[in-house]
Length: 209
Image 1 (spheres, rainbow, N blue to C red):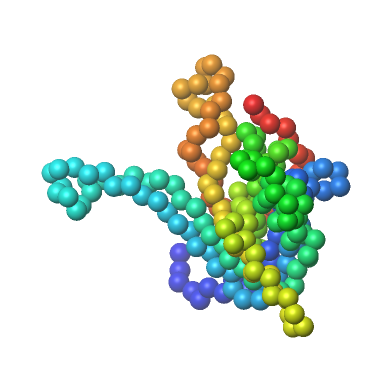
Image 2 (image 1 turned 60 degrees about the vertical axis):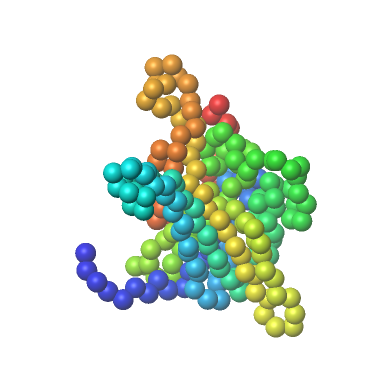
């Protein structure tokens, strides 16, 4: 390891998913969303819970538990594909059309892997322009809260996107259930981000339950 100036270079935003983002053949496809006008802001948020013990007094915990976390990603698109952006919006509304909600309580995630039928999360990839740059991939992301700010007028039309990523996992066999074949949802090894690059297209899988 060595110190250096870190210059990631321009960043291409790519998205991948099923539903509104699927290919014409119904497979999960990687799309170019666009280029940003300014640096992308990545803001992880970690949650912890203190374990209090009387011997340590009221202010200092005897230990601290990790309680997972999430991540906010803010980016301003200046050169982008409007249709892909509309598809991302529709995907975050549980896959209808952009501007139309499905019924309240519709789940964004099914019981299967990320690119299985009925999973409406988007894999968000930030790909650096420099070969030495570090790619960021958030497998379970969606446009959240105030998801989009559009500036419409005679000048450039920026699309400011607010993404949220969660550390989700699939149902899998745990140690205790291995002999019985039962699959359970567990937070162990739940992935929030990695530095891999999504491949261009994958088959859509069915639910594993």
